[in-house]
Image (cartoon, rainbow, N blue to C red; front, top):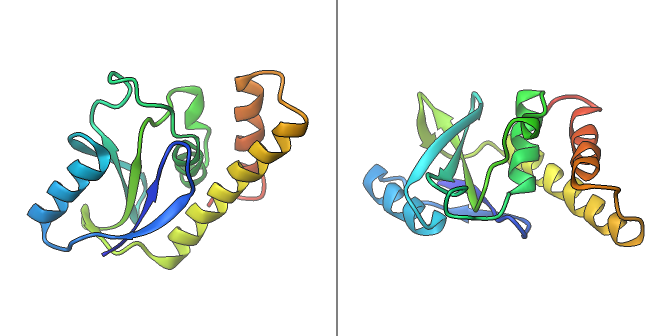
Length: 146
């Protein structure tokens, strides 16, 4: 099945996952480095997260948190950040499925927004991490929620 992998310091990458639920769980566990939990931020998508990422000290995943914020239409980063690698699949009746191209495109777009901001900050760094996050949220929420 078509899915996306979002690493904390990397781009949004297209990956292929197995359709068999038992095999899918094993692959997700391996790719995430721990027990997978489901995050639901869009009715047609699942975000698979490391079940204990923050407690294990995995880095924040700015792209995945920005994507979740865009899909929800609110800044979730004010409450919490997603940490570690995140896998995004489609969702049908609560189960993983192929990710629709429209949602994959939105994820890539958010990834590009974060990359563009990071590049701009090499010349003019933001005043704080909070200011940097505010710029990202404004960029992904301002035009319209994804």
